[in-house]
Image 1 (cartoon, rainbow, N blue to C red):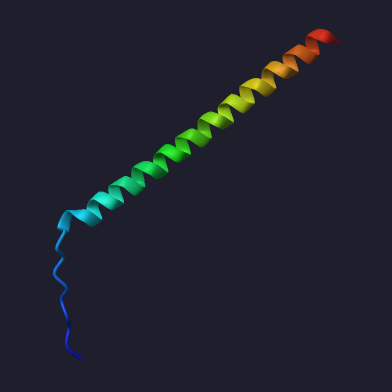
Image 2 (cartoon, helix red, strand yellow; image 1 turned 45 degrees about the vertical axis):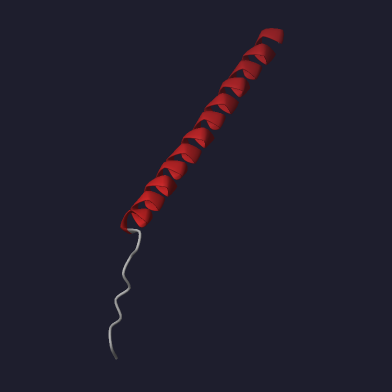
Length: 54
């Protein structure tokens, strides 16, 4: 079977897409982490309020 080589007309495209995907993944993880931290902060504050009221 003959090997067919495809010429990549846009050699930087795959690298750019991989970079964009990596950055988007990192950003979404950071956003989730921030949301989680904020939720924990709110929960901690709510627990403090409940303890004060008791």
